[in-house]
Structures are given as C-alpha cells and as structure tokens.
Length: 289
Image 1 (cartoon, rainbow, N blue to C red):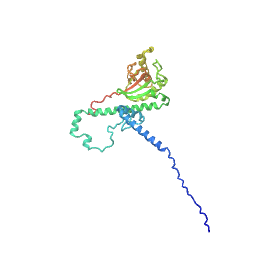
Image 2: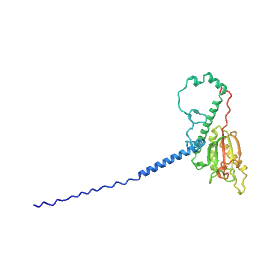
Image 3: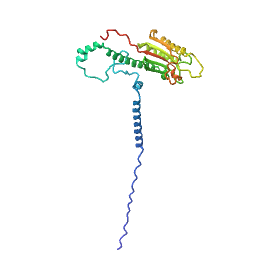
Image 4: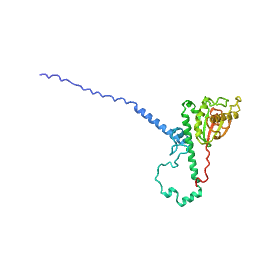
C-alpha cells in the first residue's frame, strides 16, 4: 500500500529590527554642555571683578524696597546689626556689660574712638542704602517718566550720594545750549524733591558738559552753560519745597570732569549732579562717656 506524501512545513523566523533611538539624549547633552559653559563663564567673571564691582552688581539686582541692613526696617535712623553671623548665646554678664577692670581701663584710655568710628561708618552705610531705596521708590511711583530711567543714575560716591541727570545718545535732559530743562526733566526733579526734603543731607548741585569736538563751531560758553543749568535745578527744587539752607553749593564745572576721560565728547558727559553730602552731624562731647 502506497504511503501518502508527507507535507513539509517550512518555518521562517523574521527578526524585527531595533527601533530607532530618538534624539532626546542629544538635547540633554547640549543642555548639559551649555550649563557647564555658563558655570565656568560665571566663575571667570567672579574672579575678574573687583569687590567694588561685586557690590555694585549686588546693589543693582537688589529690590529697591527691601532694606539692605542686617536688622531694622531700613529707615534713616533705625537700627543696624554690626555682627552678621546670626544669633549667638549671650556672653557672661561681666563681659557683656564691660564691668571688668581691664575693659573699663581700655575704654577710658581709648575714649571709645574705635566704637564711635564703627558706629558712624555703619550708620553712614545704612543711611546711604536707605536714601537710595527712597529715591528709587519715588521715581517708580511715576510710570510716565519710566522712559527716563536710563538718564537718572543714583550711586554712592566719596562725597556722599549722587543723583545724576545724565544725557544719553538720542535723549537729553536739557535742550542744546539752553539752561532750562525739558518739561520731563522738571517733572523728575519735582518728583524727587519731597524725598530730598525728608532726608537730612545738605545738597551740592554741580553742572557738567561734554567737550567740544575739534573743529566744531564754538557755542555757548561751557562755564556759563553748566552754572546756569545747576542754578535752574536748584530753583526747581527750591520751588518744590526745599529750603535755601539745604543747599551747600551750586557750581558749574564746564567740561573739566568728564565721566569718560577717554572720550570727553560723548553725551553722558553732559549731566547735572545732585550730591547728598555725607557730613557728620555734631555730637555732644559727653555722649560716649
């Protein structure tokens, strides 16, 4: 008997190809490299800046309404903590009150001069920061003069605190050759006047201008121009409520003190500075005895 033909079954196994990997890892790697580059750039900038520049950057990014002191509410005569290390347990009473004989002798011999200088220095810094915050808050209260923000520079100086009305390229605070300011400049001064009146500092108003470029036509005498602009600023502040005895000086410097000595012809050299003088108030002779 013939056997039926056996059916042959062939199995073919097909291997599936691996799924294509996405590019997400490339994006993550690029972000990582960018972050590392930014980090090393930041480290390089920190190492290259001076302590004064670091302080200026910190002040620029600090909120204007927040007191920069370590304690107190930031007012002109409110408290300041000289020790920034935080709360500490109180020392023994004898040390804290200075009742040791050697402490009394040291204080008697020195007359408390060191403590007095530290207190005055800290009080001066506190007053400067508080005045800056008050002036900036006064300017922020008028949104209509926000476009003049780059023309108003508030910074501490060796003499005190400067409020400079400075020209920029394409925007001036005074018409060319005129001693009377633009209406917008007048509004800025009238806005600052109440804050300046509340501060105890005397004011020095100083006018400056840029040097004339070689070959240019001679215009208004720079001494008369800067003196007239300083006088105009004083008159506006006086009309806004500042008494005459608050002004220590009103002078014009012509082009003798440019902001940029390397380029005395550019617009920012034209400015009027209102300096809040950091004069030490008279103290009673027996205050620290």
